[in-house]
Image (cartoon, rainbow, N blue to C red):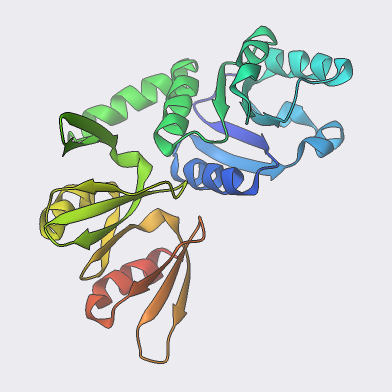
Length: 248
């Protein structure tokens, strides 16, 4: 049956990457629903109700699982996830439409979703129509460094803190922050359309990655992000607090 929406099954053991997948799937309007479990539960599931399956492999599969995966790829769009990039060749040999590693940034996940949409005619047509109604937004920040220029995908950034005349760009994987010469005021204006809100005079955060809000004795709040990072929310930014609570 043709459909413009996806019912996704995620079989991922890596908790951090699974949390990232949950965020991206919840935020993508083409995914009507998704069910998360582990590879060990595969035989107990009725996979016919899913048209997208994202499955993590830790090693080359045994023959029985290999046959299962080939069958799955015939009836659903199969995406293989692994720590080891050497499994990419195997993934495509068994019929997977894409291969990503557990270290993939958010922008790579979004490209995977775009590929799934493109492979579904109805979803692709809906997405093209939707894009015509959206304002044109920048997808990158241009970061100048000594002797080079870097293009940082906005999708990959989850929070930002001010550092004098610079801002530090922080990512899901908690790699080293990237220093960018820009004021907090300007970066706030640039990233507001991407869902960033000001929570402190020196901090911006992507609202979609906030998982927990805790009041402190001082009347301020602590924010916990879905990758474990904790940030302060100042009473001064009550509008941001209201926004978080309204969408919780």
